[in-house]
Image (cartoon, rainbow, N blue to C red):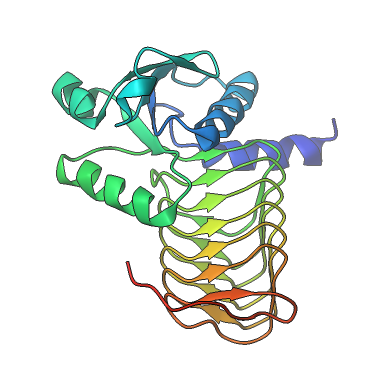
Length: 238
């Protein structure tokens, strides 16, 4: 691999904030996205020495005692609180932004510490909050001047253009493309292959459907679908 390739990989890994902290990682949520988080963390550990994975927690009792990507589901959030939240660091792997935000607020109340999981193939030229539970899967891209807020999920191939601002709890779906100077509001959800024209604002808790092409601002809580994107259904709130 070229020196430039190694530098790019290490820059991404630097955003994974378990480096230098020996507290093990707990993944909160034991669904499909948790598998992707654990697989990404495994690839990080192959590049740089990292803290171990302790396991997962999930409030679905039917999952307790099972294995997810080779790691045990230890119990629910209350089990984690009783074990000792200060003994671990958490990454919340819950795909739905509203559910993720609710869980994070419970964790914040007990002083949880968080870890970013940024895959080594992700390119990060912009700013990602440290120790903020951000997840970026393989081939994600955060361009120069962009900002990604806490507990944001960037799916495989998600593209965050220059000078874009992605607020907390947002989800950018697989291969979604956010062009320059856009704003993606708190808890907004961009479906797979969605595209935002330069300068567009997607309001808080809004949803952009898969493959939608957004040419105009999307109001908070609204859902838009299609090419070009048009409103669908009634707006929702958090």
